[in-house]
Length: 293
Figure 1 (cartoon, rainbow, N blue to C red):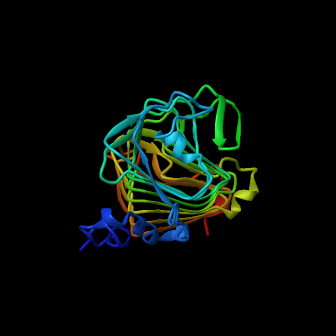
Figure 2: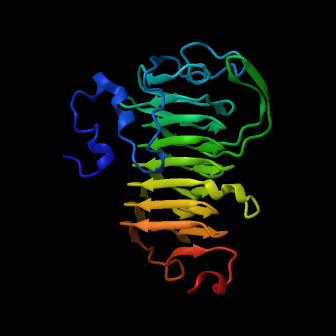
């Protein structure tokens, strides 16, 4: 019996593969209303290629995520997907890599922009590079020009009801997960983060007060070796960091500015041996008179 309540919902069931969509019942935290592609058809990704940004080939991940209807996206076999440009998703999708080793690496990132209801589960995302930009299809009915991307592993830009679970992430050009532009109702759980500087940024600007609606739950994650800072770094909104394992950060673990509410509950913090890097929390850009009672 798993003690983790999210995993206990499905991982102890030996026949989980026969009812993959039960996963949508397992999310907790601020993203607890997320159902992804539940109720939709199963879409099987058979081709790891990503050669055509405007007319993606059927069977590729890019073709799957632009479809208008709810879809539960799975993978036919192990694969490494190098994205030539940002993977721009539509609403009501689940990317479910359980049972396969699926790496998204050495290319561009995943972009969740002003959409709703997405589950991303079981991917290995690493060595993500900034994209050059260009023409990219973001739905069946539309494509347009995108400027250069930042190189985040997963960029969450204004959506609601997002669940990222059991994703392994490291070594991206920018953040591994960034949530900005009033994104809200998000759970990031059971993920493994390693070898990165700016790990998670929630709220991009001290001047963007709309991020006060931001609500994010990082839960049961392992912040592992080679991380430096921002686990997360929050502005304005509400972050409930619960039951995470923080191992040997190199600057600080959790930071914030612009009056975010950060509830740290049941977390394990193992400080690095460096006596100058023992800071668990960092209050950025605020004098002591602002935060000390």
